[in-house]
Every structure is written in C-alpha cells, then in structure tokens.
Image (tube, rainbow, N blue to C red; front, side, top):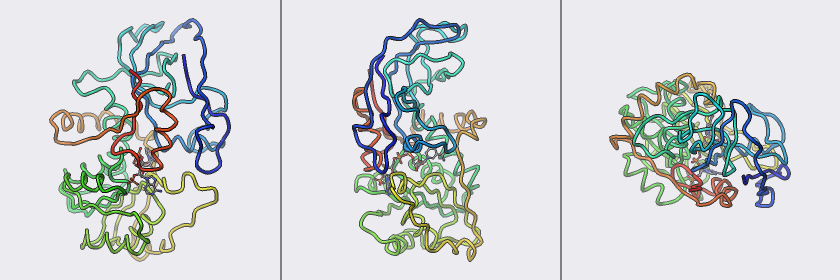
Length: 331
Ligand code: NDP
C-alpha cells in the first residue's frame, strides 16, 4: 500500500515537502477488517485544520502515520460478516491507494446509477453541508434573498441551487470568470470578489441583490463577510460554514470591522459542523438524489489523476483551481 504522511505541521501555506509518499506491506486482515482498493480520494479545505498540530473539533493528523480523508473504493478482501468483496464503499481511509480498516467504519454506497464519486461531493459530505447550512442552520425560506460565498465550489454550488429550487433570489460570490459564467447559467447573480475592497464587493452585492440579504451562507470570511454584513436585512441569518480565507494565515486574521451590523439588523450568525447533523443524512439523500438523477441539479468535478497528485490537488483548493468538487482519481 502507498500512503501519504505529514512530515511536520505547516505554518502558513503548506508546501509540497510537507507530504511524504510512503510504502508499506499490509498485515493480514484481523477479525472484522476489510481491505479496499480506492478509486477516488477527496481533498477538502477542512484538512488544513488537521495539519495545525492541535485539536479543533477533530484531532490533528499524527505526523508520520497515514493521513486520512474521504475516499470511495471497492472491497478486495473482507473479514467482516456484512461487508462483501466487490462492495463499493465510502470511508475515511483516503490519501492512500489501498486502505485496511474495520468493516464497521465503512459505509456501503447506495444502489444507484449515479457515478460513485458523487458520494464524495454533491451527494456526500460537501452536499450534506450545503443542505444542512441552508435548511437547518439558516432556516432558508422561499422569500429569502440568499448570498453564498465560494459559490462555485463543492458546498457553495449545491447551496446556491438548493436556494434557487426553493424560489429564492440568489447571489453567488466566486473568483474566476468561468466560475461566474457557470453560476449565471444556474440562474444565480454572479459577483466576483477578485481585486475588490470590502466596500466595492458590498456595492456589487447591493447591485446584484437590491432588496438586501436575508440569508448568508459563509464559506470564506475576510472581505466577503465584511461586505455581506453591510447588506443584511433585518432578521437575517448567517450560516457560518467555513472561513477559508484565513486557513493558511500565519497570524490571526482581523475580524470584520462592521460586526455591529448584527445588532442594527437584529441578525443571527451560527457556526456548525456537518458531522453533528449526520442523523439527517438520509433525509438529504432522499431529497437530493432524485434531483441529481433527473439532472435538475447540476454538479461539477475537478479531477486530478494518480495518488501522487493528492497534495497538489489539496493545495490547489486555496488557489481556486477547482470548479465544484476537487477529486483525485486513482483507477
Ligand atoms: P470548495 O470546493 O469551495 O473549494 C475552495 C474554494 O474556495 C476555491 O475553489 C476558491 O474558489 C475559494 N477560495 C479559496 N481561497 C479563497 C480566498 N482566500 N478568498 C475567497 N475564496 C477563496 O471547498 P468546499 O466546498 O469543500 O468547502 C467550502 C467551505 O466550506 C470551506 O470553507 C470549508 O472549510 C467549509 N466546510 C465546512 C464544513 C462544516 O461542517 N462546517 C464541511 C465542509 C466544508 P474561488 O475561485 O471562487 O476563489
């Protein structure tokens, strides 16, 4: 088996040398274990938090041991009564080609015609995050004017479409021109944050949503949060999902200068972690799977090939190289 380890905890943007590709001969399966040939690996922004060396809501990666992450693969050997050879499963043994794990820790993929890697993206953790943030945290309703940052990413691109499907007016913030064009094709008002001050971004949001913002789905922080705060309507709700702008910061990032807008607008801001809501995953799947199958919801993937590309694919998330879900394809 080949796998990545972290050699040390990065300060600021990680560099390629912090990831070491290692090889080991896997031991015999013990009782209850399964062996999986990974087809797809997920790289996600939250993994940067696990590289910080201290516990957040999840333990840090241990230096020198196989890194972890979402993955989809096929069972090639099993010592577990319920997991059969040939089963397709999702699990956390990513950053490696062959995973050996307790069978109880893997989840069989639902029986469907949807490509298996969708269960790492639009029908997996990022999709569930969009659905949770919009419905359970922001309590989004059809009359809301919705704003989403990192709107063309894995989480954001489903958040904007779920809000559109409710009948909301939706504005999406993104970087590159092709991302803005995709958002526009989805019926979303696209707004670029590139080369803009918070004030300029705020003005652009006002133009795109003249009736203000009732729900803000926040993935970025920085000037996006500052700009959004100044466009809030009374009683607005902010689902604080991520703040990727600060994940590689070497020093604490300044807070928004206009946080007092929450008082003036009597608005709420609530952070959340999708894992806490996993009991609702089946409701999400029941709602979203048919819409994906029927092509009513669009999703995109940005695919890098080969295990060796995993660190770069991860680092590229912070450069905005992905549209939709960033994935690594192994076979
Ligand atoms: P994305 O697919 O959205 O990829 C990251 C995107 O963020 C990039 O493509 C880029 O798009 C944008 N971005 C990167 N750096 C910056 C920056 N400095 N300023 C503005 N935009 C930036 O990732 P995910 O959909 O997987 O995750 C989105 C957010 O959701 C992250 O903050 C993540 O941490 C969070 N998250 C939170 C979860 C929770 O449980 N709370 C669960 C899953 C994700 P662009 O080209 O538009 O800049």
